[in-house]
Length: 109
Image 1 (cartoon, rainbow, N blue to C red):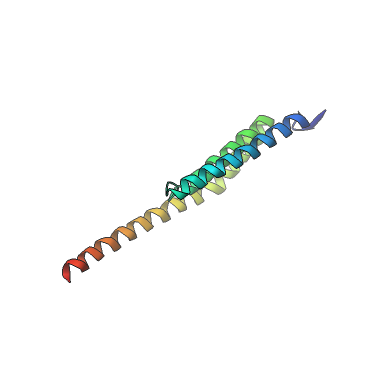
Image 2 (tube, one colour):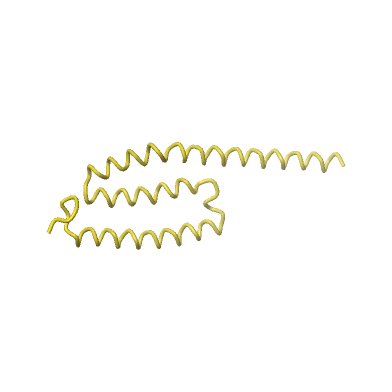
C-alpha cells in the first residue's frame, strides 16, 4: 500500500527508526567531542552534517523532495554557518590579543 511519496509504510517506518538511531548515536558522539573541546567553532558544521543525513533519508523516499529540501536548507543554513565561523574567528582573535596584552602588562610590571 502506497503511503507517502509512493513508498509503503514499512519503508517509511524503517527510515524513521534508522534516523532515530542515528540521532541517538550522533548526539552521543557530539557530546563526547564537546567534552573534549573538539566542537569549539565547528558545531554549526556538525549540525549541518546531521541535517545532510536526514536529507539523504528524505531522498530515499523522493529524490525531488530531497533536492528541494537541500536547496532550502542551504539557503537558510549557509549564512548561519558562515556567521558561526566568523564569530569563532573573531573570538579567537580577541582571545589572542588579550593574551598578548596580558604578557605585555606582565613585562611592564
